[in-house]
Every structure is written in structure tokens, then in C-alpha cells.
Image 1 (cartoon, rainbow, N blue to C red):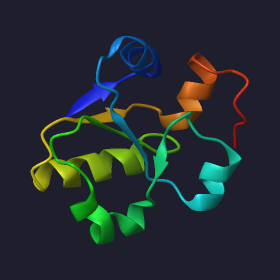
Image 2: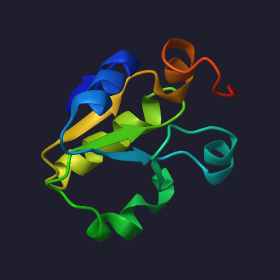
Image 3: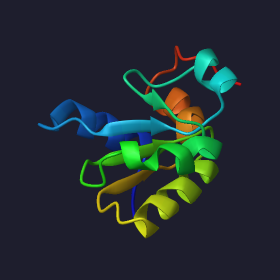
Image 4: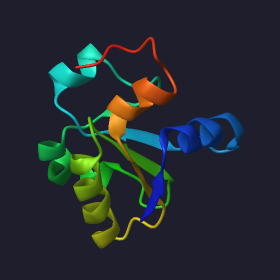
Length: 106
């Protein structure tokens, strides 16, 4: 599994020819409060139910609040054959601190 800092992800999103899936694994209330633009919410507890709907070949950046849940989900995805998984270190909290200071924080 690869790891991106918030700055790495910002640069990657600005330059990637194929946009990755930004997979937010937080709870719906967390996502409503704040999220990275264009991210898709699939709470951690629902990944097992929808994994067949995800493309194991698509680059997937897994996001949560601090990077702990996302690391667990990223590891699980790799175990299921997903080959292009990236964990956002520090989650949306670090993203708000380092990339988007206008983002709400909790």
C-alpha cells in the first residue's frame, strides 16, 4: 500500500490524467460535516457489502478522519486483490490543516 501526505494527494489530483476514486470510509454524519471534493462515501462497516461494485484496477485513495480507519480498509482492499491502493496519512484532519484551511474540522 502506498501512503500520500495531504500535499502529495493535492499534487496528484492536480496532475493525474486518470482521476482516482477518493473513497471516504467515515460515517455519514462525518462526511456531511466535511469532506474532500469529489470523494465518495462508503462507511467502513459497509465495504464488505459493496466491494463487488468497486473496480480493483482503479487507483483508490482511502480517506478517514485521521488515517487509521482508512489504513485498515486499504489493507483489506489489498487483501482482496486491489492493486492501486493509497492511504491518506492524517486523513481529512491533516488535509484541512495543510491543504484546505477553510474546511470545517471536528
